[in-house]
Image 1: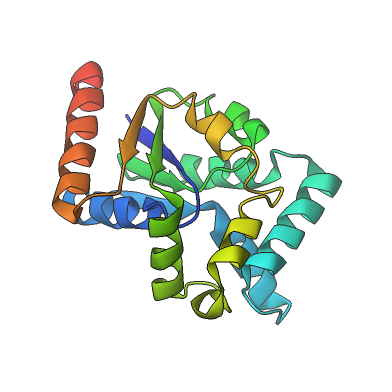
Image 2 (image 1 turned 120 degrees about the horizontal axis):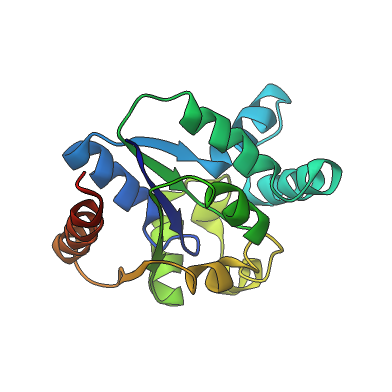
Length: 187
């Protein structure tokens, strides 16, 4: 029986940190929505910048449906043998509809205040140009179409974790969530 945890949260909220922790402690397999976009951008030799990801995601959704990225991940999950699967970075309600079809599916909302997320994003420089962006740039990107649904999807989550504290507190909250859902499922 697979347990599927889907992470929703604003950029810089800590989804990647939670994913890495679930891999290290629980042996999870992580699939990121953005990996699909990264693969396509890389193949096209286009820089892996957040703006390019947004444009590509919008184009794919327009041509192939709002659930296209979730359909790819759904197939990936079906073909994977891990007992714990983490889906990192859901961004659209149609994606949620597609993934909720899995039994043992749990949505977890990771959140954090804007200023902390900005500092984290700038420090990690995961996307091209993030290390140079201003706080105003970061706030402006919050209104991108790919960010619009995050809070609404987060309201549907089984649990919400505020990641404005220490790593130890974050990990404890993740462990509590895992304990709660595994006890429900005899995992």
